[in-house]
Image 1 (cartoon, rainbow, N blue to C red):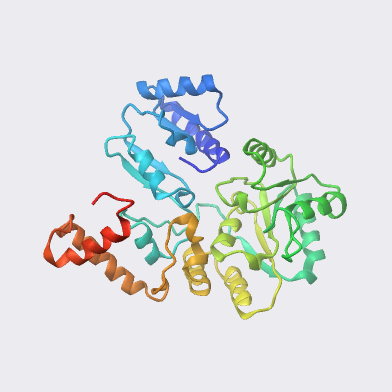
Image 2: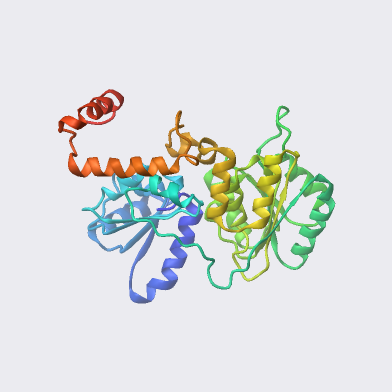
Length: 370
């Protein structure tokens, strides 16, 4: 299960290239599949004629029934909720579950977020990948950056340019996709093929633009952060982030990971405004390291847990007493105690746990059966 149609399609290509020679059948289930094709897939799936089903949230629908589901893999887990992870796992008889995320999470914090899972960490680059050179620049370097983009395109490469806003906003002094696309298409990069992409566009439209970029029909793609997840374009060698000070470090690290996916030396240019000590520190860490875990730890330290995750989206509470970074040792002790209590007294029937049971009943009676 992957969060976007284009990523699911990429996975299907990879799986088929490896597995088709062993007569292992893979199939794709995404929103744009025709009704007739979807019915055929669902029928084959239930009969056990499909070995591997790859798809988006479409896999969560009630009518998707597996004959014998043994393994569930969720890619970019941070884009799905815990409940969604449970929904797809419930389609089998206690299947094995593997969740993956490239969003760097401090190792200790991962124990709390994914405490119910065994955690494996891959902290090295795939073979033949070159380190991405990162530069933080201010407005005075604009012309040099533009010349560098032209040089890369003339060598046959492609570029991403990421903006924090879709449209201009009088209250916010930041670059927008539509404003920049207009300027770049007609003035700065008029001799190149420039397109734009943002989250308000229809999914079909987004997929078409991404496919064109992948097929080298677009030289410069101006986008919001919709491209931060799972887009694989090995020919893209330059990532420019406008108003980099408006993004979290973990997000900048994710965006940087869109380039450097092929054989070419790649570059990430962070254009920032403002001169505060925190902005300078954040730009410095991005230039000094490509290690996602170091970056995530620094992000948590500088911004706090609420902003780091976007708590609403990820279901992580805003702690009113504890701080996820400073109080990690206490939180780890609490977690091990919680696991011990659950093993000793899962229904909280012992006298020593009566107050805890009452507290849980008061707080969660509307959400769980006690």
